[in-house]
Length: 226
Image (cartoon, rainbow, N blue to C red; front, side):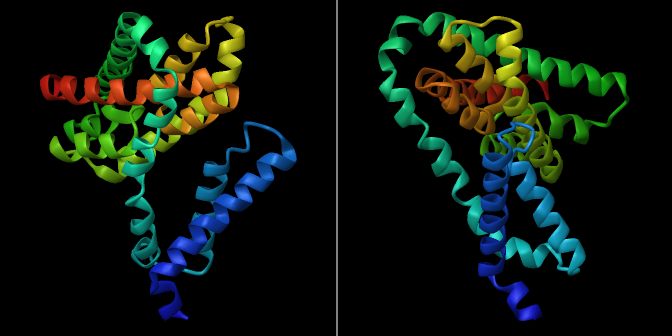
């Protein structure tokens, strides 16, 4: 049995199966609270704990899935290209909006870490929480942070954004799909973008664009701030 758990196929199969179950549950219950990624994380963790499977064994396959993170992020360029005209017409507000959003995210984390007395490593790990995982991990590693903490913060931020985004858009009466998409992508990266695509093609394209712009801004600011 241990040989099965140590196989890369076990980690891949478990990840795909739990996410598929999460998708089915969300479709059945039709609620954003039942996020497929969150359900997959909980189910995977439960399996590992119940059967006492070492994380290292699971990660033999999980690391294979991780390799697709960067290409998957790059594929968002397709949706951006379909809205290239909007980008050309509104590039100034798009860049300014993403810059302000990124600074607000990083600045609030930095201030809260100082307020609660967290050490430098934890601060570095939490600051890139609002950018997509490959970029956040790079920022964390380059500045001596704790990569697992960064990954957890990024996932939590993305799930929270995908759940709250539609509600906040209605509360603040955001009628412009460009503004809605940029806001979602700026605060909740790729996980939020998957939700933005459900709201509309323009929202999804702008959210994907925000991922790239905010990623660049985060890398540049982290070099000065950290």
